[in-house]
Length: 606
Image (cartoon, rainbow, N blue to C red; front, side, top):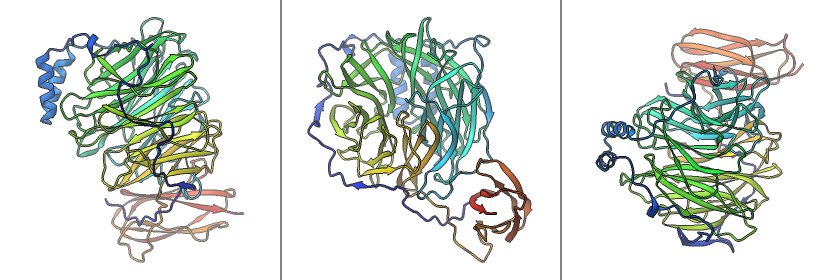
């Protein structure tokens, strides 16, 4: 059923704006060849020294042709044949580790701050994992919904992750599912959101990957998946990535070709493989799953250098030779860190080559990269954006030709130091504004959000002065949100502590509905009087016969009373809620009538 909303758009960024004609600065460089930054001390492990693939050439050619002709059945068939030549993944045996427990989401919690302007909406209340790197992930799904994953700290559990969704542009958030473990600690998270069938939004699956260990030092850390449909059903958790003895996996990152395929979607997970003390680097472990997270193959990519903080993106080239781009922080020495992009085949292989993006001197450290490849139609040159910090100042680098040349050291922000950056992109180029990046300054009082094009200016600087203090030690996350063909900046961040997760969005809809004296649409009106003591009236209209529920919640999201729970005929309704037995405070009332959902706030003053 189509929802009858008249959205009033209000600017929710309390920002100061600087029109950036260009982010070029005295340190920027344009059109640099992709090998210009190679250090003399870097070991080369590129195309000329690669091993021959174990996959027969004829299968590779057939697979390439299947992709070029968009033949999904043939791609899946040949892909299954190719899988037989790849090393099979051996997950830990059940009984050797404690299983992660899965729980249905708490679906009755309303938003805690439904009138967004000027505050930020609280998606969840509680402590967040404080190890900084990738404790949140935000995705805009192919189904038009937004999804947020959070690595939480909850008493009684060593590991605890939760997934939330918004089906109405950030107006309301619902917990889809959560999973916890009494003995295993969860490290860093990375999320994919993909539709299994192109025409069925309910086939959308959320795949959350994280490393786990029985020790706080993350010795022997493996990689696990939590997978669920968007309604929280069909969920499973699988500890699939066991490291060799004395090794551990850290900083997992995931990408997929899901924009171009549904049933034969291939998911890639990569992680840094290192010794348990972190002093020895072995390479990047690359897992591939072609059946939505149930089974995996894997190889170890030996990059021959010391690479940290991998960030992966899928690159559809339109030639059948698609690639995985992995941005890394390469530590040349204790005083020189560089940004490199490792490119490998979408099929598991040790073969790879590198783009040498930055060229630093001693005392300069480029750190913690984040990469996005803007996915357009298949035959358009790839636009690549990498954000990072340079001596704790936010910078970005970009390529408009798939990595053949790079524009380096552009200014991402000018208002303070930063520990982490984040970037994302959208496939729609019409109307521009398809790339987004953000960071929080170290003192946590300001988030900078940039949305624009990968052309040398990421648009205006939006300095979001937070209503709630942000954590400067945990990265914020951002995404491009679309309403039709119009794009908006969306971001989420942990509060100071870190505790709680807050969300805000450019032009966030306030949920104001058009008044009507006929029951030709669904509508929930604001209660009157408001504030009230002890009774108030609530009016609503039902456009057609359907089952209706109206419930009242307190500030903690707890259900306190059910006002309506029955089938109702089309028409206008008025009900009275007597709150004489409740304490003063803010309450929320929520209506569900078929596909129509709305929430409003009311204040009881005694």
